[in-house]
Image (cartoon, rainbow, N blue to C red):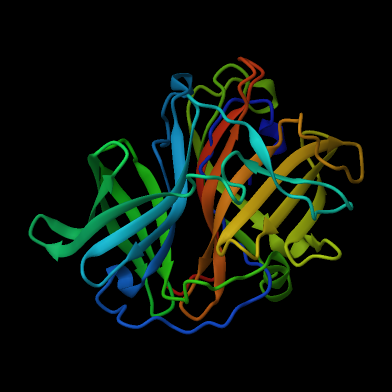
Length: 343
């Protein structure tokens, strides 16, 4: 398992697929008519990116997006998503101020905080599967802003009555790596960070691919190529922050020296959204992040089954700070971390 803080001075863009659970839970009526849908599920939390193993980090033009696909039985679909790119580093924004110690902020990739006009972006599309020319799952998306279409091919790589997984096979717009996990839960289903911690205190792990600074990589060593591996989030090792259901905190020793501080936060008004943040605090035992620091900020989506069971996260780290090489951070990684998948 890699250490995020070892990489904190690198340039990279991370698309993160992580598995975790959280918070208070709303009523969970199951949606009907899902049996003819891709993987027999309605809603898919997804992350896609143009990063792939062995790609040159010197390109510094990697991007990622995270969000939700909604499939309808009439062959139509909707995509709601957030997007970040190394070529347009946006830094971070304050997502919440209910973390711990009291008064600390939780930070997130800019535009992933609540209430941003124009986000999530929304595309309409159509889908087909199991037909001539499309033996798997084919989706065509229409962008009303540019008036253009984009096309993707996915394969169902795991399926059960509670959860399904689809894996990106190809696209015509540059995406080469992607995962999506689907369930048919109620659209307004909400799960808080504390609920995840109390009811699903497992370690969630899975694959990642990270674009990094070719001049100043992990521990100051050059990273010439995109690296892929396995990472994890030990939910059971977090502590719930007092006076809120929506924030977990953790401090752990870093192999790079000192301690790392982690936040995992949710929002009762934004179902499925998770803010994940980590940064090195030196020899301090706890520490509030400063808005001028270069924290690792990750945009995650919860992976939920039809029953409401929590299976993990999928998302993007977009730690994109425009300070100028070699000290800027342009992390972009695609990754998924799960536990106990039913297939």
